[in-house]
Structures are given as C-alpha cells and as structure tokens.
Image (cartoon, rainbow, N blue to C red):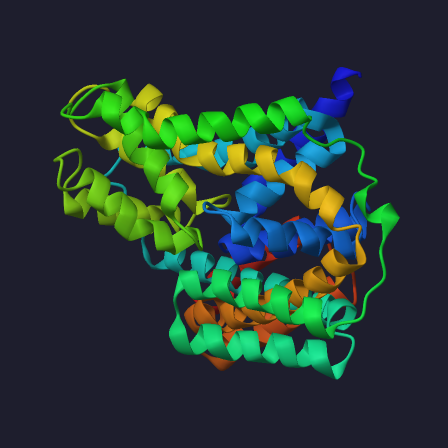
Length: 394
C-alpha cells in the first residue's frame, strides 16, 4: 500500500481538526458531511452504525469515530494517521495555552467565538435532519427517536445515553422487521483477530495493573499515564462529562490549582477538535516532574489510548454481527435512538449556548440553508460564521 493511502486520511482529518468547532456532537455533523455526502467513504447506514457502536464505549465518541473511519479506509496505520490529524492541532494549541496561561480575550474575540457556536448549530441541525429522514422512516422509529430525546433531555446524564441506546437495540430487535445485509461488512480494512485480542489485553493491563505499579507515587511518567488513562477508560458520554473526572485526578494531587484548571477548560471550548485535548493542557501545566510539552503529549496519549484499544477489539465483532437480520433490527432501533440523542444534544448545550437573540437565529438560519441547500463546504461556514459573528454580534 502506498504512503498516499495513509496520507489521505491524515490530511482530511487534519483539516477537520483545524476547522471542527462546536464539540463532539458537531464533530459528528462535520464527519457525516465529509465522509458520507462528499467523499462517499461510508454509507449513511454504516456511519450511524459506527456512531452507535462508539456511543456504547467509554471515551470521546468523535475521536473513536475518527479512528474507526481511518481504520476502515486505510487499516491500522490509516487509523493512527487519522487520529494524529484530528487531535494534534488542538493538542498543540492547548500546550501553548499552558505556557501562556495568562492569555485573555476581549469583546471582539467573544463575538467571533459566538459565531463559531452558531456554525455548530447549523452543522448539527443539518446532521439531525438528514439522519432522521434516512433512519426514522416509520412511526415506530420516529417514536424511538422522540422518546430517546425526551429521556435524555429530562435526565441529562451520560449513563442514560448508553442505557437508552441499549434499550433501543433490545426493543428494535423485538419489534423492527429487518433483513440480513451481507454487504454491510464489506469494508476495506478491519482490525485482525490478533490485533483485537492484543488490544483488549493491553486495555485490561493498563486499567487493572498499571494503578498497582503507580501506587504511592505522586510524580513520574507512570502516575501521570495512570491518572489520564483511567479517566479515558471510565468516562461515558465524552466531552464535558470528563471534567469532574479530570478535576479529581489533578487538583487534589496539587498538579494544577483549580483556577488554572478552569481557565484551561474555558480555553478548550474555543478550539476545534476533541475537547479531550484539554488533557494536553493539564499535563503541560502541572507542577512537579514531568511537566511541559512532553508531559502534555503524554497525558493526551494516555487519555485517548483506551477508547482506541476498545475500537480495535470490538470493531471486527461489530462488523460481523451487523450483517445478520437480528443485528440489523437491533441496529435500526439503536440508530433511531442515536438520532434522538443527537436531537437532545442539538438543543442542550448547542442551541441554548448559541441562540440568544434574533441576530443569532438569523445567522444560524442562513448558515443552515448554505449547508443543506446550497452545499457550501463546512470549513467555509466556519470562516463565514466567525467573521459574521464578529460583525453582527460584537
């Protein structure tokens, strides 16, 4: 295989890593636009199946979907290249933020950041609309989506999302009529059985035995790895849900003080790419040994390693199961609930944090029309949203 096979996903995800503002749900909208509608690397069904699988797993869903797309497209090295492309821009920016912690914004910066949030509104609205029209094709599946949205909005708990998808799968398996789809597993690449077994064993070793090896040590590379690895292994829901886990890992140990922690997290909201890149800030800003840029990269690697190992372990099994009629019915139920979960996330936190005036709604409406009907590329919307935000909302 030529190096261009690995370079292609790296460059595509590098661009997404530089332009995907709006958090994990918005990232899925960008991915769908890029890989389903524009490049046709995945069908709508395969993309949402990937989202459903990654929603079940701990860690950041958008990073896992990124890694999975790279794996399916170009194998293990394509997955790693995709991960680097999507993660490194925000990771390096967070390390720079740790060195310049006294960075402050002004009113104009707040205005263009608001514009980027409105871009996320348009992207997620388009994704929810398009996915709903394809995946909620009858009253039963529409009911799944509506019920999932209601439950998630009323409970606001990341564990509820996992439970809702599981229930959607079970009820869909019982009530939805589906046929087997042998073509569903025809991906270019999947992890080998040896890689799947090795990844699962490594995941268990790092989760169960590394804490024993690091016990009693405050500083050092191994305790740093252990703290962030456990955070990436145990958080369901991704994104903002990781905040209390990370705070419990770094503030009581005196690695960073609470003010520095909150300042770094606030900066992370303004950046494209995965919010889990906040780990790079914490590693670089921590006191004691190690610290600085290498410690930031080590913390970022540690928090994102467990979800990648789980994808290696479960993607082959998922690919085989999804071709059977029972699995197709279960996935149909899961996919309908995923649409409902995305609909809930569209309202809270995306809509509620961005649409606060008629000007904001007007800009969101124009950007949505540009994306849905005029087929404007998302990266152009990012630039237009930032400029319009500065002009209209400043």
